[in-house]
Length: 455
Image (cartoon, rainbow, N blue to C red; front, side):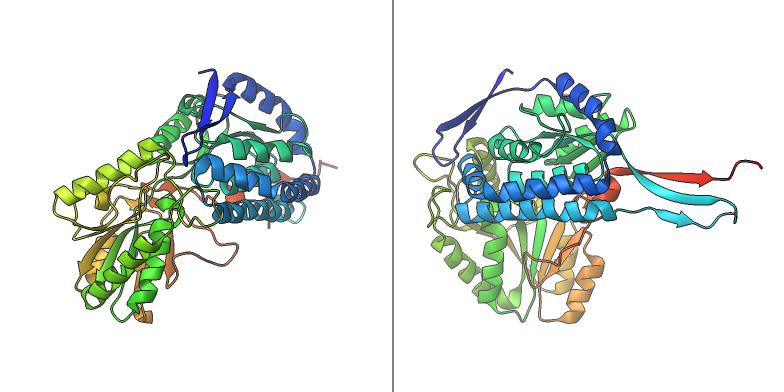
């Protein structure tokens, strides 16, 4: 593959043609640049990141527009993602110099300590659904600890990430940060390259498993954030209208193409009818349109292939007995648009319950108790996140203890204090993918013992 063609999912129009990268050239360049960057003082590395963050702020609007055009993310959401990415660069610029080891109590005449050291060359294989925010965080964290970085964005949304890399490179030595342009074959070549020490993969379970195998074969480190099938539990006693607002955000934001989108809804029978009616009303009222239109509330799917996969889940569910309450068919005209869709009467065994849909589909099942909802929420191979809406704090505490996921959110679909970090469960990945603990994943720990020479 010599050229990558990038299309606007709102129209199908080609918006970019990019020459593809040579993995061996990328890795050899990073390997040569790494020693000097590792020896650079953490404060100097932090200063370069802070300067880059300031420069990114100057280009934030153009990067957000580019991200919307190539990925279909509504412009306001895209601006928010760019802002979050810049914030992550600033955060890791501050955290890098604070990433410390531990002193040990040895003999009175010796010194003992543990210290973090960089891993070397890091390959970042990143997704298309939030390319700028994820790239900024992973690039900044790796640079902060002294790794040389090869950043491979998804072939579906490379242009906004390349713009980020171009801005950050201005404050960095040559070869310390490079962009890798190509398809899945390039990602596989980087993941399996003998001179790549660390692979960070955010994406599908299937690709993540191949990355893990490639790294295990040579003893390289893999940090994996993979798919999810996140449940929402709507408990008895909640306000159905408020719960429907939360569900609509969780199911339909970014056309359901968020790693922690709500894909399964378990609603208590006591509030089910009113909740579903409200959710259907909200789904029908969402303004679906081109990502760059300021009035758009939900943009297109990333491409026709993803839309077809989502529609197949919906059609198989209906054929198996689920009821289609709204949506449920590709929208006519240009672009890969799919409407907000609500299904009721879903059941275990259906794709919309078992497999990651990654589209604007709310799959609703009525339950008779909170206990039943917990059991069904945990009946999955995934374990990324879960949401519980409940007025009962005892139920909230049980959810925090019993849901087998990395992140539990109570009475809010999105949100959380800064500095949090989680490890996914099951097929959803392995390792801290964000927060201060990410720095531990990206480094090795060395123990040092020093004694004075004999007198």
